[in-house]
Picture 1 (spheres, rainbow, N blue to C red):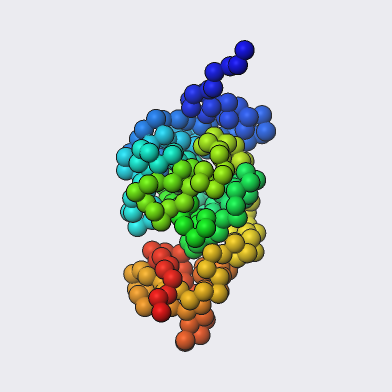
Picture 2 (cartoon, rainbow, N blue to C red):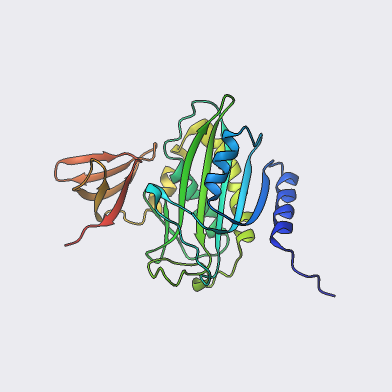
Length: 266
């Protein structure tokens, strides 16, 4: 007789057990709905909990957000999404330059393992599939007396949001996975990667990122505070995660602050 499928809370418990059996101590929690998983974990860290890594997974967010306070939409009828945040403790004063890029690499590697078509990386924190946005990463920081906590938010479309034609989804590309199958591939990579990042920074993933750079050698314009009008060929990123452009004035470095890229229009 077939067993009924596990519900989401049970899937979270099963994945947490599997991670612990593999020597990775990461608590998993499931909520059907919340405002923002990042906001929830930032509040928990600032209130003195958790004491160890915690991944919060939500079925729906009413106030999901990305960089520069942009909304992340996961409206009903979109086919579902992976919406999660991971709170990870690092040494006080840890340098986090390039972390959002490293997380993008680990997410792309997880998608490769699931048989997805080759995804591309858009600086500094997006994942594209067939030129459309598949996923985004938001890294925020909370300092406590004991640690510097990185709170890493990930939103990944499983289906394609019908109200966002510029967004991509895994299901439309024949990758019929659910959020837990993605997390099964992603969380071990996050855990191992964050431990290495704490020692070496972004450098070990620079080459992979540049190989999967969505706009390599394309003319782009950088938009953001203090950088309006900067444009040139996107060359790639360096070992700190900074983007380099070949501009009419020579090579210029763009830091991983509040900037975004758009294709240069003729």
